Image (cartoon, rainbow, N blue to C red; front, side, top):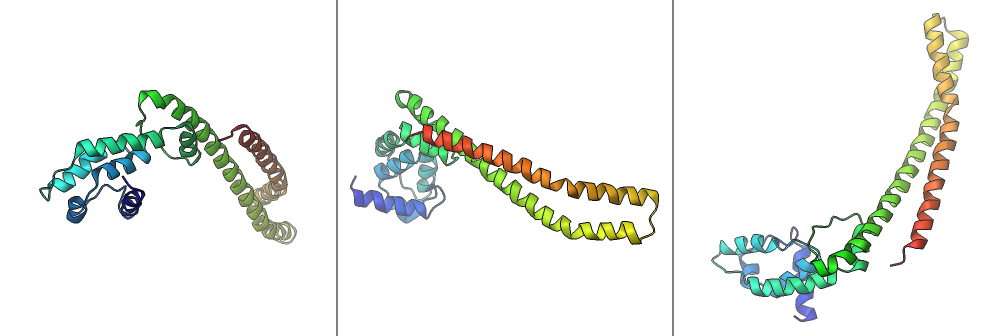
Length: 202
């Protein structure tokens, strides 16, 4: 398989859904070894061959399983490494259980660490969003605070209405404490992320 052939196949795959739908022209010109290599190197299940074969059978074209499987195994050798497992996990991608027994342990070792990093990064992102939302809420509530205070002074309120407004004022006044708490949570997560990133070297 030449580099030029692989590049062409990769380009074709980028234009198809998971490179699984094949039209008549693609079936007629298919390089089954290259297609298998692409699927294997992307960690796609070998059952993909059945989808390709079914698509081509509609045009009375027979898929070459032997060539596909040979290419697929070569692709798996690229995919099923510890470094790639870490990369896949760190991007939050799923693993379809394709790695053979001799390489699966190392792949999953990297994948597990990558997933841990991905999860922590997601937690940091969520904490940052929570802090932004809280700050926006405070800005909105500050505009309302003056209105509540004026209402207590100038409006004729029942005891119940007065109590409700006082409770709302108290809730607004407590918002800065929430900002402090969320900032502390975010900083703690960031420190944990920095520590994990320095520990994981891939």
